[in-house]
Length: 245
Image (cartoon, rainbow, N blue to C red; front, side, top):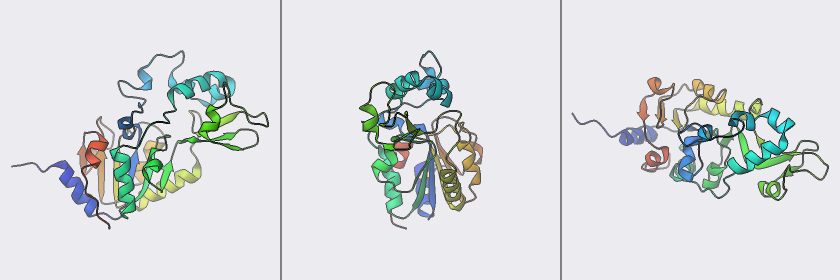
């Protein structure tokens, strides 16, 4: 008996769905040259004075902003990265009326760069920055123009609008993401190990027809998936044919 190609199964599910939501993590952006945290080559396997969780913590930003910004500028900003096949296909699915939302743990803005409009950035974005004293907004370019700890004209420290360790998620974004997942008839989980709390709990709100997991390493949702594909997310999605719903 010939086993059906998993991409063909995925295509059939996509064709049969009208409210697809994509939930993704760092693995979506590795094909754009942005390293993830937990892979063999990720940040967790590099040597620093402090582990990434401490370097990117609220405490480090508050008490040692110089150390925080040295690490942040060196390891968290990949402004030359371009959207890959996964980002582009998801934007195409949204434009065709098939995909209703992207829920991402990434902070690189590549989904929007590819053309996606309804994106819930659970952990914020490196492209938004604000003064911790007066709230004035700063672009990432304005941040980089300042050496050392970037300061606002009012004297306050400028902070990236990213969720640091020890900080909670934006409740409005969280509610929007949960509602999108709850209303979806298909949920595609891709490029994420599903170990980051509380983001990993959002997939539990899915009540639709098709649950798909596309990830190179195991996740706790594999056993519940209607389709499991252990490959690179971009290599899989780029094979999909998109037609308007």
